[in-house]
Amino acid sequence: MIIKILQIALKIFSIILTLLSAIIFLILAVFAITNFIVYLNSRNAPPPLTTKEYAIVLGASVHGDLLSGVLKARMETAIDLYHKKLVKNILMSGDGTDTNYSETAAMRKFALKNKIPAESLITDEKGYSTYATMLRAKEIYNINSAYIISQNFHLPRAVWIAREVGIEADGVGAGEVKEKWYYSSREFFARTKDFFQIIFKAPPIDERNFIF
Image 1: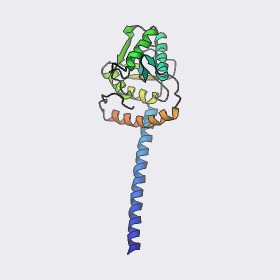
Image 2 (image 1 turned 30 degrees about the vertical axis):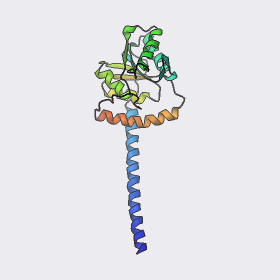
Image 3 (image 1 turned 90 degrees about the vertical axis):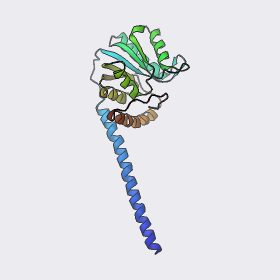
Image 4 (image 1 turned 60 degrees about the vertical axis):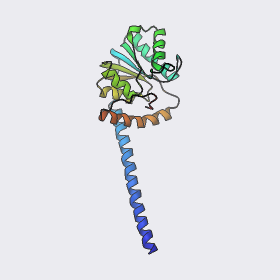
């Protein structure tokens, strides 16, 4: 009797283990396939660069008016494109709704200090995520063509989203980051998240400190 019970228990355990393995495999397959699609459809046009309407700079952390190293590199890249007459305007997107913390205000001040005319600068204070930034760039600011400015790890997702919402976009890298393994791991999950947001036409989450 005990042997039969053990045999049944082992059989049930084997079935559960098989099901769990299948579920894990399917989840990993979904992540792998969605990441491949994003990479495949975010490849840049070959140089030379042509003039576009905007440079879209994705926000990152600031300390008062002091830009983080990552954000400073992004802004310097956009400013360089402007001075080379490769973009006509700069859209700076990030968290700018808090009077005590504003990425977009700091970005704007940095641009003005670097001789970018005020009339060529636009700030989006509700660019809480990459997805929100691109969707709002198209729907709120009516941007049709743009260079997307960010670090290399981030560009495939940002460019892919921009193209999917109807922006003629190419990416311009603002260098690498120190903790590349961390950001690359985070992007692996973020690409899948944004893939399904695009597929289901999800409205952007209107809240601060959104992780992706």
